[in-house]
Length: 419
Image (cartoon, helix red, strand yellow):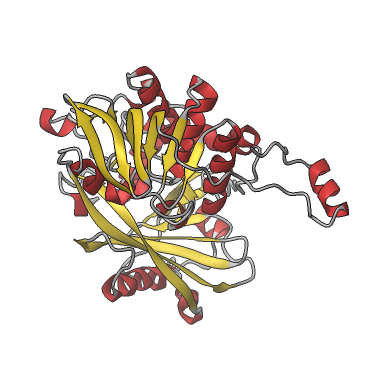
């Protein structure tokens, strides 16, 4: 098990030794016969859950099983944005919990996750949007979350290159959360994996779950491509594949899977120093430390389990970018990728027990999965360890759709592709 702690002194030591003494960040574990907890899914949420189970709740006989390699799923296929600028009571405390965990994450896990609180600015283009963002900002401030409503002049001083005088979409102002920003997605996966491994968690890659074994209505283990693994409790954190994995236990989830594409441009000199979103269309953009403009938009309009998208969405995203900042029209697109969004009917997640005893569900994150990573892991670990919801995640019940207690943050209706 790796024992070296990363520090300035360890970096200097390895520099003098020609960097020959670094140990692997985590072990390539072989599955044991049984564990107290088996977490299905080695993405950010699964790894964070394993870490907090071991760190905060003392449960260290934990296995994280991942069908591919660490970083191959949504944790490595997003636009790295973190924020807590939500409106509804079910969401604001949870995402603010995540934001506070982000702020101390690097010290907590002893890993440079490149947390950059550069600010998130949501632009508005008409009176109705201004009123909506004013209400959202007030809700944030009532919950102790920072929020500033900027007028057009303040936005112009911050981002003077935007198309303020667009006849169709004039920029009237924006809602700014200065504590929002970006985090390096790969580093989050690697950092949590390393931290969990140091606490004794087994991270098992290239181990696909092919079945969930139940006895008398209780989950007792998982069938995998590397053999059967017994479990006291089974925790599902499978993102876009949640419906398929839950079906192995006879569950039908209120979730649809859609592809969400993201894009990065060629490297540029420093251009935009915050995250900005286009209020007249679904377009958001930031700049990476390597200089590439990272941006995205809506999900693809059809159900899919594939990690690739289609051309109409690429066109739609580029149109939004051109309407907001025409000067990017000559920038070359370097690459694009797709992640699998597990879209619930109200656009909010699920962290709850399932009707199968000892089977727990973390799913339905829609667009909010990456920014929720630390709080999701903490709340899911609390649920698995104590068999009761964490106080900040009590609204994320699986049965809320049957009870009519949906958390419709966007106010668009109970239909996944609206969120």
